[in-house]
Amino acid sequence: MADGVAAFPAALAAAEMINFLARNAKEGLDTVLAWRSLATPEEIPAGIGSTLTLTRKGRITSTTTPSAPQTAMNIDSGLTAASYSIEQYTITMYDYNRMAAEIDNVQQQVGIYDQLLAGARNSGVDAATTRDRLARAAIFDAYISGNTRVRGDDTAAPTTTVCYVDDIRGFQNTIVNGVITPVSATNPVTAIESGTQSNTLNVTAATADVTNISTAPGGISGSLTYTAVASAPVHGDAIVASDAPTIIRSGGAATTAALVASNTFNLQMILDMKAELENNGVPPFANGLYRMMLDPTAQRQLLADQDFKVYYAGREDSETVQSGYVLKMLGVEFIVTTEVYLQLPSTHSGNGDTDTVEVKVRRPILVGAEALIEGQFTGLENYMRDLNRNSNVIQAEMVDGTVHILRQPIDALGRFYTIVWDWIGGYAVPTDITATPDIIPTASAARYKRAVMAEIAS
Image (cartoon, rainbow, N blue to C red; front, side):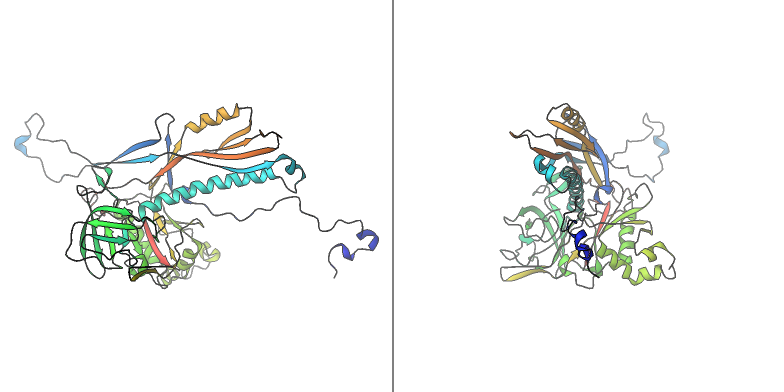
């Protein structure tokens, strides 16, 4: 059968328009956002500065000792006030903005679609994606820290006082009286080397490389300086700070570089991650569930896991089996997002050796309540009201804490509209050093306790 108007009689076909353009623009693919769902909002009032210091208090240690009868008649009844620890963390406010579109008024009138609407749509998506990625970066920066390996591509071989590592985050500072303090000889960080040999390192400095070659998401390659040890660290060995967050690697791999293709995501890892949060007394979110952030490939690996298949055996009528989508199970809510870090295979050579990650690495993360704080600058409300009184602004509107601005043309020809978004805020990841084994007997020594990261291969 002939296509289009060619099948019509010649007298009618001549009257038809062919090869014409559609009068609208189709939407492109969007990324799936999710990380801001983990954040607890904190309003930062205008006029108090660009950084807010917040304080979280710990609990007092329980007493199991009976009071002494002979002191009961004292003015203080023989009692002394209990003390508790505190921790302080800061939220630094930054200004994020972008001109998302510049629309030519003449072109807008002769164009094939509404460029103002398209620009506004893209502006909103851009602002939302920016904030989601900032939230993701903040939580990863904290929960991947303090876990690294001795590089095999260093510019100098490891010695009894210095070695090069893939990522120095978590070794640059320590907690002193609840305050994050730079590492020094006075305030060192204890780290354990494991693998080919065992070593306890008293780290006194962490120095970033001039050229960053870290393979970790947001990582900072560099060197660790420590008090002299009996034998130099060995290439490939793990170096883990004593207060490092827990990372559970598939197959029990000691480092990211030790992962192999068979180290995929499974139900047992989820149970281990959940147990770690519960041992630290981390509360779930308001709906009673912890949140697992993962990408579609990690979810696919979970659906193929034998333990998962046994768990769902005979449940062919369940939504999970029918749709292939894990929503809630075992006290965990699964949130599938495309906004994840994918670490590609890599090889770096130097000093006669190499540092290799052989597989593509994915990092699902299980998160409890208040692991991430989102600071919102309240001064944007006043800014928006001032903009709406500006004769050059057609409209300024606040959407989810972000100001979206449409400005009328101010160029000589009066042709170019601009669409801009603006957000002032920041993200912080509080530490949990006040939750010690004296307070919670099952607690770990981790500096950050409210999330557990997994590392898997694909």
